[in-house]
Length: 289
Length: 332
Image 1 (cartoon, rainbow over the protein chains, first blue to last red):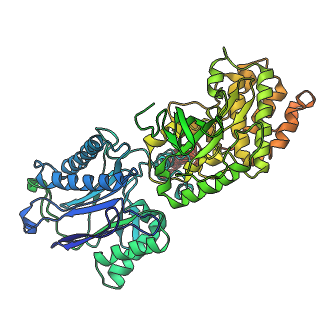
Image 2 (cartoon, each protein chain N blue to C red):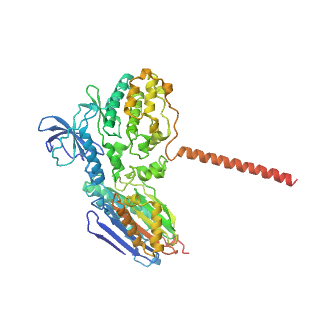
Image 3 (cartoon, rainbow over the protein chains, first blue to last red):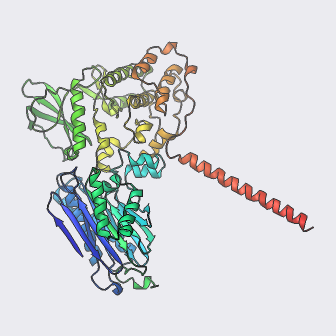
């Protein structure tokens, strides 16, 4: 496993990747051409103990900070670091609870950081993914998205916590209108705004060759859902490349299309049909096949 | 004011001395200030620096302020921008001694007298006609954005607030103040279109409706419910609330508020022409029939599903009866 942050304003360019016995992951975050700073941040925890030790499961987190005067880049970084710290050091819990706890801890960390530094309006969105047994669990607050690509079909796992997301759920607008709605980035939920936050958790089954994509609005704004599926399928299956190449292809395409914001993507490729080690102490919850 | 206001009384910004903060919105902070060179009172509008993190938005802001500088109309708050060097981008506006229309409306016991509402409607209509001729669509017309002078003249202010519509990465909390209640927002804007002069005409209609009845046409527990009202409900007729409103005035207001822009007045001039000859109009010539709902069709969709369900159950029942009859005939 390796994660590197290189030069550049804000959080600069962040890249990381790793391979475990049952999955390969990669993440990449770039400022893009429109914004001078990278206010996104991303991180991952990959268990170093052998896969079958049923230690803490893998965790991939992406965050997109908001608030001017450098507050955004601080918020996203504080949030990701707090979530990973909670995941690795927190009490043993079932994966769903552990995931929710990690995001809540991130919320409090950002909330406190904003109070301490007087950074009014500092906040961040967050999407976190863990795999446990035969399940994928995604926690979401804000308007980042998680997609699942199976074959070349791509489905969106998360709902956007934005004004437009709520309007779409109320069927006040059509999905086509939502795509270009000017209010599509107005958030109704974020980390750091209040001392408590409601965290959505979505669970899905996992099969071999499934690919999870976590991405910022900079990416989903520029690359449509159908395209995500085609790109994943062509990079992994036709060209035989890896998760690292998928993230690079997605981020490069979004930037080439003048993505209006920072662009980040994290990709997790499931390599095996065997169950994936879950969070600590949960061994009894998952039967091996 | 909150602690986030950037300037305090006595501080200077270029040649202007801050006298008092007037308000803090999502888009900008406004201050009453004194021009130290000529002693006049002005309003300084200092945009929120957050907005300028977005270069596209900054370009749009520049373009709109350029246009605002040209405006000269008694129904529009004037820009006093002389184009002198500034240490940061802000607007210098005419100071209007008065209050905004929201506060003035609160001062009425009940709705506004009909003659006063018509007079204000005409003033707003003329200002809109002027703005539209100049190529400006306000996009966020509401009583908070209309100033009332001491002698009761209305002046439209705050165009440019709609700039926010394209702003990215803003928290809901940050915006709730200005965009929390879409009470005056046209259906097409709710659906994400940028809006055209007819969107301002819709907002004009909603303001008139509010002046005449004392409430906005679509209320709800939250902003989503209010939006649903604009897209899917018909406003309660004005005369059902208030009998002394002439039927012709009701027809003009409801025509301005039609859900589909093509069914509204197509220009402020057309609207003014009708407003000026209320006593010659025949309300029965106005097409105010219910319009189809807009949106993802929640109501229609669920109704369709319900009918489909009813249909399937009936079909199943018929099949069952046929089978029983057939069996009873065959097995007899």
